[in-house]
Length: 497
Image (cartoon, rainbow, N blue to C red; front, top):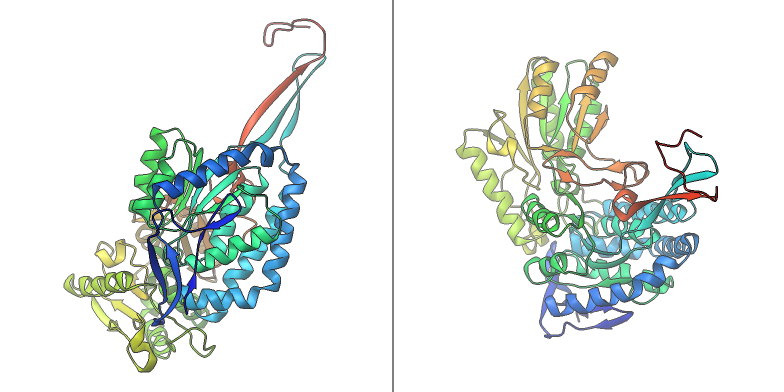
């Protein structure tokens, strides 16, 4: 029997007020229903935001090291449940078990990292220009945050958002992707078990139009963190700008790998395979463009094609399978439509391009690894994010041309170059317009202790994850404090003694 999933509001597990539901199904086998999910609306959102607002003062006054201790407990529980959570991720999101376990490990890493911020959250103490006066800056929480997360990393990305928000003293209403609600529920259960007080974290399931947008628009929400499609992110950005809300969005990429003629060819092929077809191409950092030097184009294409042809496809719970399904029928149809568009625009479908329906895959949404050649830089398949196992190969004659093509898109998330020439890689490092640049590695592999995000239409606001310039710049605001203990009025920039 499918599990009955509920919202979590003010420390209680509750149904949607209107009683409507939808189903979460396994994309590898759509006969399997994982849960019956509340189809929430603005009424449920209002209850959740009210709970978060009521809990804010008490949680914000809880010492930050104590807030961090809750995250340490979350991390410890995640460690104990890694296998079970990984298997659930595999069943609900579809990516293969090794990647699903990696999703949980990234959540563990982030929980530990942000727990430590409870004993840092540094400001600065600065000398005053006046005697008998001191000056300092401190971080303070923003308030109530709406957090809207995607389906492709159903454990990791929520923790990317929840951990820094909570350790900084904010309260949260969490609206996960409608495709992965059971994973989100398991995660919130862990926060509850770790001792998070009622109202500090609230979970509302549902769809963007009925639950997500009312949450962003709510007058008692002070900030919004969104990861998802570019169109939705830009729509929400306008709402937040009009209401003067703190806002962050991370919305995708069209990420290139440049492969120069002096590259380690075997290494470049392996990196391109991982970038193009890892997570079935359903990563914002997926390498959907391979920009290959003329001198090695044929050798690269032959090797890349042969290895892609032998990628094993199927239910990710089988460790022999290297690529799982597309998340949903809607996304499956979108990917197949882009394959049609590529051919209509004159690109050559070199490999794949069809639904994969062998054996049990007939009950899922599988697509073959697909390679396009004869691609020009302005074709739609070379400009628009597809979010599936489709890669375009573009031929170039030198590094300058490769960098120009790599940058000539509206996104700027991740980019990579394979070359054994230190000077070429230094130029690429300088000139690639992307938030993440990899040298002799694929476009996938960000680490949580550094900020994550991109340029241009990839995102807006502070970056995700850790380090200076990372998530804490969204979830805290600066307060500057001047203390004068001279016992007299001193006038800055005017008094000389």
